[in-house]
Image 1 (cartoon, rainbow over the protein chains, first blue to last red):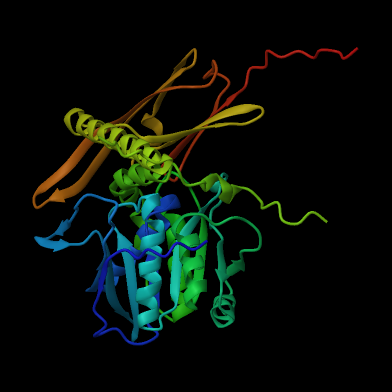
Image 2: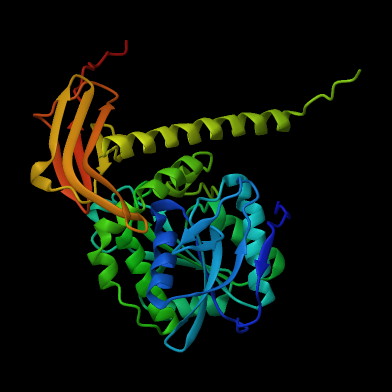
Length: 256
Length: 139
């Protein structure tokens, strides 16, 4: 069942080109999405394009250099002649808000015929032993899937479960006919993982022909982890009701 | 006078909100304690495997050689100096000078038998499970 409530949102269509990819980087496992979205916008600068209101939270505003921002916002960035929209959030989305926020994301993307690129981590218990995490992709659109394969650095997500906001986006997108590509890097579950985020940035570079350097991200990994520890703690506690453990399990599938 | 009967969903929602409020209160207290003591409580997890307990502690910025680990019975204490400094407001930084953690393991552990590594800001301690089991023959 796809729940249909839509979180209130504001989206300025002016300035956003049709087909501009919308990168969803909301806080989830390893804060991979948060690190990717925040790194891209801090590297390329961004113009506010809209926001989504998380109705299940009391009023919260973020302040940066005396400017007031909605915590869950969309910025428009230009990279190597290409336009991207980046959705990030300074606070975790409570599980009750998954459907409304996912529906808003799909509605926004549909209004500009934008593909949605969900970037996130997929928990890997042995992450400490992995130098370069793999990035897995999954798409509901053949063309997007082929683009992902053409980068040569991703593997297809074959079997497993998806939970949380990305699952809600994929389901909502099916209903509205929106295109979605998931890029999931092997990551820590409970600790911020800049290494996994760097692999996702490399993938996005190849996917969109950009050249965002990842070295500064890796060099500042420890500082980034420190900076994000409060958000990580909050995200872990907010995600407690989400069956994230499912992402470690193979689906039972069909018994033949 | 009629009193509206609450549905099961209302009750569940109330329970959920109470738990969220409790969690929020706990996070606020933890943050306040960290800011006043300038000592951070690291995020950690305990994994129980068939032959070992794994304690993973996220301590970015700690110096490997100055991490102190003590264990007594089920209690594990970890201390490490760090130089945590994050910009907060203009001209203000939140600072901390150490990580401190006291955690209770599922069973008694021995530090002498433990294997420890510190990688990418994560401290991992593997305590072998002391087996007190014996095999019972089935008649």
